[in-house]
Image (cartoon, rainbow, N blue to C red; front, top):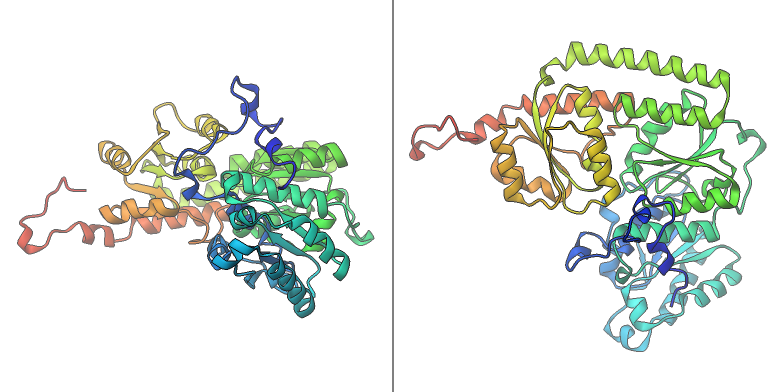
Length: 456
């Protein structure tokens, strides 16, 4: 059995641990269909593009989470290869250790990766394979890190998988190498995100580089194994729109003295707050002046572009039907574009996510915490909304009802973070609202009678 897992349910730096009922909420029946711990760990570690990722489980486990990632192109994109021990019913009865050893030997000999992550699955728990011992033996044999990641789906939700991945990185990767002299600087940071960060990381890093800030490693984002080994050299850790790896940030603060803070790059207000936080941590007067000048210049340009090109968005009404960070991260940019958010429907948000929604929304915005399809459609029609903003599987709701919608899932569009991302989001909203297909879709066929003006 893996060690040290139960303590991850009670993270001292989580806000809800100050309340009466401490600890993360336990999954409800059926909730694991939304994403298990295994999926979370894979989403956090798969962007390490030059490492080999071996799943000790069935071929079905291998496919889990691969579709939502954009593996990086740094070095050899080995993470695009799907390695699995391919356990069968016979292996579940007799054990899969022999197959695991053979798979590790094959990968190390054929691809020679700098590191090999071995993912436990629910099958590993059933067969009681000693993953730690096998990985330790392989590490000595091949003289390279072979890291077990314990995150069987039984352990909990996808967030728990992120925490398990953070544990593996903290114990076996971070702090095992030093930056070259040429890469050492005063303004080095780590970005710690979630699966959405894989697509947004380049946009954020480009913005920071204009201010002279160097990103040492992008944890849960596109990154190389060597970058992660040097992550302890950063001056500050920034949690980008996600607290799922807050345990890793806290442990890096306690072990390496690296402070951390939460920030977002969606919308000018959030960008300003994040950059000012970074400036505060660096405590450099010249850097602070540079940041303030940059913020003023970029915000002025964005306001001008919104007035000239996206004026048609002013006063439009939208309903958000999203989950997780997408329920609050896009509120600020929508309000800056002059769009009114009449309602927000969520299903699996943590208490922290709900508090961030309340901090950003207006008083008359309706929040439905346990929403369903009928409630969202009722909300949309009662308030005569112009658009529904959705993510993931929620996209099928407006699609079936022929309602205008924008899917903000990061797999389907360019990055919305940064100043350019705000312009990109505004343009996408304009394109959707002005798309004539919605009017055509609402027309009735000749045999259905005259068009109903009130039909939506």
